[in-house]
Image 1 (cartoon, one colour):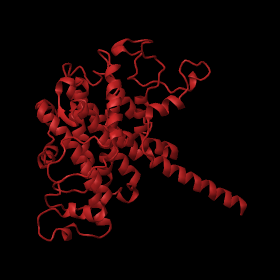
Image 2 (cartoon, rainbow, N blue to C red):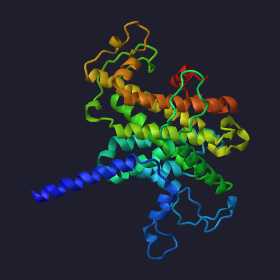
Image 3 (cartoon, rainbow, N blue to C red):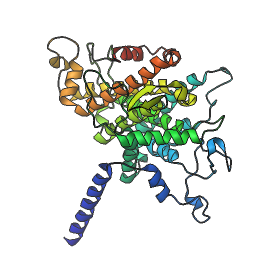
Length: 395
């Protein structure tokens, strides 16, 4: 009995500490890394420092942007990438690949924006593969999951201000600590940028898009039914039950992580192109970093993939519970699916609202910036994506 009592006490203390960590007011990632990582210059501990990803500068010293970087320096951005992507080597390599890696001899003059869109598709698909085939055997300890959620929340946590039905705020960067964290990442990225190299913030945005888009793709693989359309404004009909639906679940922590990742990706690419005067944000494309702005359509694509995955999950849940979506649409307006989600799946409703808000923020930037990002995104025949964007209220 004494052993059982001690074990239960340890488990209870661990649960309380975990809850405290998840519910903490905020996480200062720079302070966390500086206190927990050994110095790269120390001989005895240098071997314990994780190897730097491909985006880390290879020169011993660099004066680009007034910063000095070392080859063995493990950056906060590296921690974000490795943690967000759960250490999946294939996806990490995709987001860290150097510019030009997706240009082949058949397309020697490929536009850099087209390259980013192709990279995003490949990385999202790679992470979806990892979820489907490796996540059940390659997941780390609980502490790693807590760290991942804390890192994502530090950039993409929810705003304390409720969404307004009329006169919405143009840009929502979350609470003051979220805004400060986003601005810090962008300023450090600008200060350490070098010609011919990606800014260090870019792999972070790519990993956020791959995480959110990969989760959406995985959900679609597991729960998708053969339905004629993918939008709640039209009739949704389910035919054959998916073979993987009974084997996979979406825990609340994963939904929160997807929501935070989508928020963080949109905030990083949007704040890169806005300025704040007297508490009001306005578009200022003169301050943008061009390379980071190329990721605008990637954020839209990932938001749409996550949106579709959540709808597929909701349809599968309705059928599993024996509920008819048509019963939530007695007036025949075609919004039965969304009413079902509002009534039965509040967590899914929150993720869908986040996808919408992220897309709205990016679209407001694109409308000011020009049509080139949309031309690149729509060139692949993404008709469903275009239809979803049309339904968004950008007023």
